[in-house]
Image (cartoon, rainbow, N blue to C red; front, side, top):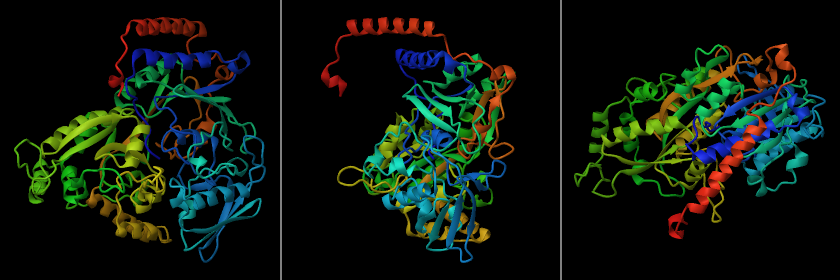
Amino acid sequence: MRKMARVAAAAMAVTMLAGLTLAGTALAQTPTGEAQKVTWTLGSEDDIDSFNPFVAVASGYTIFAMTYENLLGYDTETLARSPGIAESWEISDDGLTWTFHIRDGMTWHDGEPLTANDVEYTYNRVIQDHVGAFFSYLRLAETVTAPDESTVVIKTSRPTPQMLSIIIPILPEHVWSDISKEDAKTVENIPIVGSGPFELVEYEPGQFALLEANENYWAGAPHVDEIIYRVFNNQDAAVEALKAGEIDAIDALEPNLFESLQGIDEITTHAADVISFDEIAMNVGALQGDGHPALEDVRVRQAIAHAIDKQTLIDRVLLGYGTLGSTIVTPAAGAFHYEPTEEEVFGFDIAAANQILDDAGYLDTDNDGVREMPGGGEPLEFRYFVRSQNNDTVKASQFVQGWLEQIGIATEISSLNDNKLTDVIIDGEYDIFHWGWFGDVDPDFILSVMSCGQRPELNAQGSNVGGIWSDSYYCTEEFDQGFLEQKTLLDPEERTALIHEMQRQVYLDAPYVILWYDKNLQAYRNDSFTGFVTSPAPNGDLFGIFYSNESLYSIRPASAEAAGPKEAKGIPAGVWIAVIVGIVVIVVAVVLVRPRRREEDRA
């Protein structure tokens, strides 16, 4: 999945107050009976991008982890695959047939039974609709059938270990079969009908998502009655709410705010090891759009790689909470990670970067400080997009822009929210941008990002008929052959060797400059809840959102007092009402005295 926000863009004071007011009112006005429930609140500056599994690329997966389940789960100690919807499985001697046995007695949130037919339906829908977000997992599946309500059989075209790597939320056939392929791209999917330990019951955009415990969950009801995913306009406000006890936890903290919470007795901080990296991505040749032609030249991309001082970014932006980035499979993936040799590595070297561009014919022919294409053509002026919802990308851009100036490349930095940046990427209307990825435990997913089939491609109507995950438009026949072959290698050492070579190829071709492998900085109040399970042990993700729902399923009040009647979190309703009235008065006054903007000013 795409990495979620760390810090949202600053908003106008009235907008920020209004957002917090509405959120606080929604919580404070909870009926008396519901106020007695045991509620765990997670603060975030990242609103949900979508509740639709066919569309979401970022924060929606946080909700999916609590509301949907996959065919298999993850062992929280080792991240090896473990029982999920399927309680057991086996593979045929020829390696072509996988049989999964569905546990009995499972139901959807609406009370309908969950059976093998739902798994069959979900996987076949992904295959038939060529759903870009999930299709790669099932590329080698020839048939998916449910011979009875307790059995799923997957037959593959070649022996493959990949059937244990599938991470696709299982959908209820009785709900999604009525939604067409076209509508599946736009349906809001609220309420979510899932089978996970929590059920989404309410959502207010920009304010909160409310999830209630699934009392009929197959493993038993969770230990808390509700989870509130509360959205803040900025992390400073979320941190203050954590200190005041208005929320119970924060995920993906900015480094300086993470450090500000250290030493507070009631708060535990945790720097989690996760499968995560940040990158500068380059448009190496879109199917549509208008990327700069210089970025199609591997020499330009390699020069850019030499011009970025990654260690300075780690020290100055991450405050040391990260390690040098290199290849697309992170060190957290263990033996699958490939580290470039001393001869291959693109170390920080401005002189080497300039020499590469000189030798390639990119010269500053008019002495304005910006190089031109060979022969004195288009200047090397790149559009550089950063995420308004992630202050790390904004901070890093100030350094990167300066280094690129030193090698004769000009950049125009623009800050976009995640949804808008996603649209820009799919349209191919960018040159470089800064974002990041959370990968799967198996490297197949992150490798798929570089495959030809994941490139977005718009049809005449403007709809994406290609993939969803490619953001550099990188595509080579050699890499695609390797990508398909690694899916079929049963020998772990042989597969690892091929995956190493694929990483090496992408590293040298440089569609990405991997800046860093960071940590997920988390904090929670230790005086209210306990029972968190790291995934993997001992220093993995604390809230388990990306790899397992075990932690949020297992959390419980830290004491008997915490399990008793609880007041609604937040400022009392009377205070919020007073604030609302004050804001309305201010807004009305501003509207009455402000001259109308001319229509051309609105453009």
